Length: 143
Image (cartoon, rainbow, N blue to C red; front, side, top):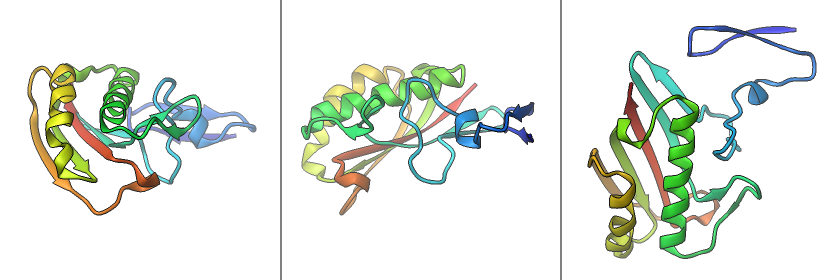
């Protein structure tokens, strides 16, 4: 058995058939498919790693329309925050990575319905995203 200390300042014991990934499994949000933490608390701030438009059941990117992907990314962020006892109202900063900045208006039309408190934000056009996604968003939330 292993004794793991999470960033929530509690000791958690793993059974012989559990892995660290099982311990930090986000129940509604997609699991991390690469070696990084989905979210990490530092004092009162929760730093959430980027979210893609993964359907957590299939682990596939949802339909290839910017509107569908934006909605799924926002849902995944909401699930991730919920698993860490927060909500979208706690978000203080977002960073949006877009494959095509021409989708800026379409993303804004959906984004404004999720992030109603208008956190600080940066939007960046990138040449390519993992899994050839159209959008990726990372957030910082405050307890």
